[in-house]
Amino acid sequence: MTHRSRLIAAVAGAVVLTLGLSGCVSAFMPQPAPNTSTPTGESVDAALEPFYSQVLAWNDCGEGMQCTTATAPLDYGDPGAGDVNLALVRHQATGSNRVGSLLVNPGGPGASGYDIVKNSLDFITDNTLQSSFDVVGFDPRGVGRSSAVACYEPAAMDEYLYGLTTAARGTDAWIAELEASSAAFGAACATNTGALLEHVDTQSAARDLDLLRAVLGDAKLNYLGYSYGTYLGATFAELFPDKVGRLALDGALDPATTNFEVTKLQAKGFESALRAYLADCLAGTDCPFDGTVDDAMATVAALLASVDVSPITNSDGRQLGSNALLTAIIYPLYQQAAWPLLSTMFTSVMRNDATDAFQLADSYNGRQADGSYLDNSSEAFSAINCVDYAYNDDPAAMRAQAAEIEAAAPIIGRYMSFGDIGCANWPYAFTGERGEIHATGAAPILVIGTTNDPATPYAWAQSLSKQLDSGTLVTFQGEGHTAYNKGSACVNDAVDNYLVKGIVPDADPMC
Image 1 (cartoon, rainbow, N blue to C red):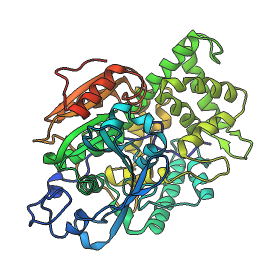
Image 2 (image 1 turned 90 degrees about the vertical axis):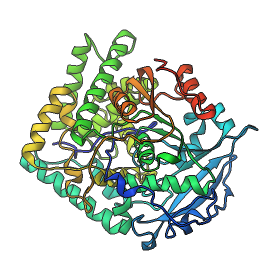
Image 3 (image 1 turned 180 degrees about the vertical axis):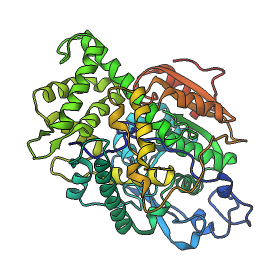
Image 4 (image 1 turned 45 degrees about the horizontal axis):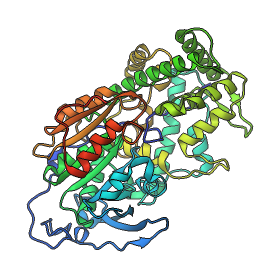
């Protein structure tokens, strides 16, 4: 018996998957338009003028924050077809030398920029940025407080995320069970979300970024994007190179990477991070493992295989299978400071106790102790990924890819395979083309990569910085997902000097 397959990914403190470039970007380029009145005095197409000329009404929402809602077209190809709401929160610049607005996206797709700015401002920005910018968090279309994707009630979501299959992993019967589960989930999303479900793609979200830039009164976009947020920012730069101000992209994604390559590289990244954790654990005290790192990796493999066959029943009746255990393993690997949680969790699982494992998996999924869910991040994650990537659920192709992924990551690779099943029969199919992003004509763009980032491998930051005509790479030599404001003065100085003063490093500082 196994858990249902679910793609793994990460954001600043949550798990996130990369997206590729969807659609031919030339179709979305700003077109010549008649002169109209906007907050920035620029010209926009007449059909978009009501959106670009809107005046935001900010309200006090506590703790020094102001909140508002902007309106965007449901379909930029047909602006009269309906609207979506975009929730924003801002912390106004504390210093006297305000640069402008700084829009922030923490990743996902599906993570709430609204919540992270309102509740964790110091986690994603330092005092230098807070002094110089109005820091603005927003929920992209489909997410959180904005017009949001809705699929299942909590009990059904539990079954979708944690339910066990009856067939053996990789068999035709197992694939059929997952296909049925995914089809039912997609149908529920279509019914409960409506027309929005077709328009949660990253191209549309990038168009929203330009709209938000304009209604905030900024001639150019200043932006700090983490993980998936780097893809959103790079897509904006491709669509609107002349509107690029200062874009810092931390934990970069490679838009030219295929879905299969993403999964394989992430599997390698997580396995590398797991080995780093085990080496640290074995060198310390109170480590639940013995012997060498290879011995400990073999123990982890045995644990995954064991719960795949005989799940551990939790106190609330849920059963811990291999995919839920993998989520519990991967989640703390995003930040080295969370590694002690892994030791606690492994110790309890070895004692046939699923409590700690479910706490980690629930934290990733946004599930609370009472069975409710904090937000719609899991639903938005699936909905956005499914329209941003091409998928193929041909069993022969998936088995060949699974073998390649397992060869790249022998311990955890097999549990990250067959991910195409979840989106292959989504109500709205991906129709674009993947490719490199060059953002020709854009101002300098800063790309930050961590050498042992398990979720967005360093190779992606290297690739994106080379693709971008004006890309500059800042390397952090260390562990964990994303690097800015995580303790490296070298990285912080490079990002702060760039965003506040426009200073681009002459060369990679190799922090």
